[in-house]
Image: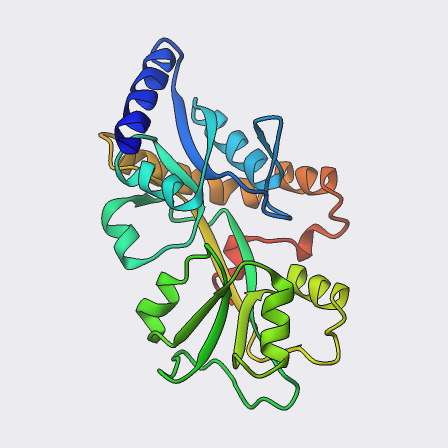
Length: 258
């Protein structure tokens, strides 16, 4: 019944957009992602949204971002009820049902947080006995496809995750570098929890549904996105968002070749 309601809603939505020229309806998680995007009064704002809007506009497309719970956002694109999904990690399964724009839109640094005396170091595989903590709702399917599945515990709060790691109930907590470090300090665990090495870049993409013409469009978007990241327009956008040194910002042509 819920799925039918979503289908009817989007058939009506697409009918309303039919008279508009070249509109892409893109599903996005209905939560803010610090440093990437935020929802403000129903509108998606932030640097990732601005980048994609500008690149799509150059190809003659307007973007309509629609908020959904994360799994629903991805499923809507897979079912071709939207034209695509925003800031999605690439996995083999997703690549079989979606057309990924090959140039990544953004990057986040993944860190495996441990106690100071831990000898854990991610070397491409998880042991089956490793007790890994992640945040509830986060999708680690790509990592598990490539690295094996450990014993996973999901947490609904960072405080609970930090306490569990400090008490030895989990061996490792996986999350982003900058935001997690700030939360560790906020909760007073800076002496008890540290990042392990190596620190790993993780890339996020726009993925289009398999509607007719979307494969070709994904190739066009990939070329235009790569060109934009190396353009003065990107440097100007970074300044708007307070990035003082554009050379230190994300550039796919540099990051993917490192």
